[in-house]
Amino acid sequence: MASNSEGLKIIKSYAESFHESVEKFTRAQVFNQADCEDAYARAARARERYLEEKRSSTLSNGELTPLSRVFENDVFTEGMMNIRHVGEHVIRREEFIIRTPGGEPIKLSTATSAMAMFAGFTVTLNDTGGKPHQIDHRILLCTLDERYSKAIKNAENS
Picture 1 (cartoon, rainbow, N blue to C red):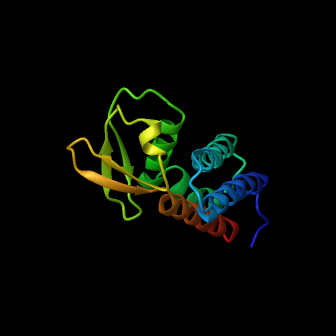
Picture 2: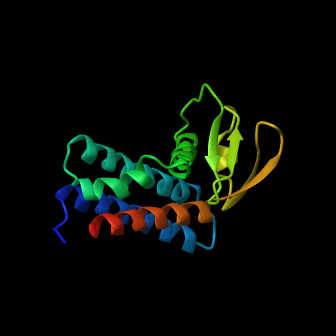
Picture 3: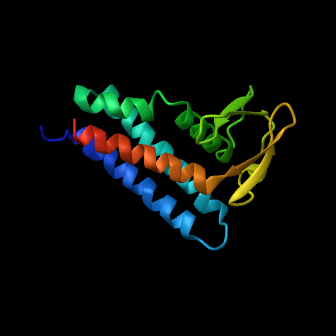
């Protein structure tokens, strides 16, 4: 097995920062909106670091394949980045999709507010058709953390 690239080591450090924020958030007894939003922001930073390392060609082909599956070509990760955008108060001009850990799409309105999205550990939001969905931030963040960790482990073993 070849040694890991510097790019992978950097991505791993960002993913570890995300992991620590997920641990802090999920262990809390009382919901803290800032900790929730921080975990989503750290997830985004890890993904952005991957994109930068890919652009800079610092990853080996063996590392790139497992990382791209999760950090770039994954609808669940994309949905998590959409949740993060709500927290950043990014104005959306179109409806957007988030996904359950099982992959079920939930289409949300452009009017989805950060207050509604980040009101508790679990929130209920209506999709664009009016159907209510429970969004459990602990489950979503832990799922993404597991996916990031698995992708990095696979890249390390490539």
